[in-house]
Image (cartoon, rainbow, N blue to C red; front, side, top):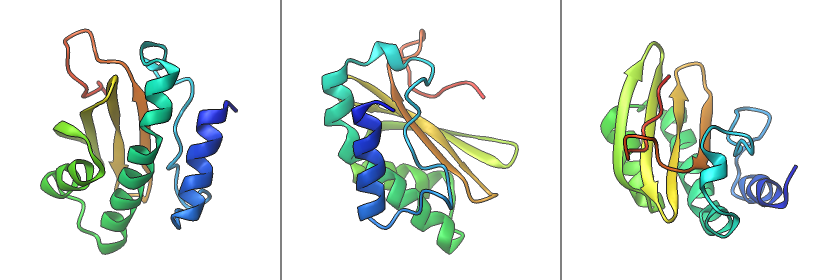
Amino acid sequence: MRRGAASVILMLALAGGAITACSGTVDIDAPGKELMDQAHQVANEALVAAATTGLQALQATGAVTEDAVRDALEKAGAAEVETRVVGDSLLFGAEVSGGCVYGSVGTSGTVSIDLGGVNADGGCLREP
C-alpha cells in the first residue's frame, strides 16, 4: 500500500468511517490513476475522506439520491458533479484539483471512491 492510501485509511478511521463496513478506500490501481500526479493525490486526500463520510451518512439515512450525492461531493470540495444510476448503484464523477474523483454508492451499503485523471472525453464520470 502506498503512503497516500494509508493516509486516507487513517483519516477515514479517525473520521469514524468503518473500513470493514464498506469499501471507502482509495484504489491505488484505479483506471486513470496514473494520470493524476502524486502531489494532487495527496492534496485531494482530505476531499476523499470528507466525501466518503458524507456518502456513508447518506446511506445510513437511506437518502441516496442523485441530488444528495451531488450535494455531498460539492460540500467536500468537488465541482461539476455528474451522476448516473446503473442497476442498484449510483455512479458519480467530479472535478478536483489535478483530475477527478469518481466512484459509486450502492444500495447494498458500499461506497467506492477513487482519484484519477480525466476521461478521454474530458469528463470524470466513468463507464460502469
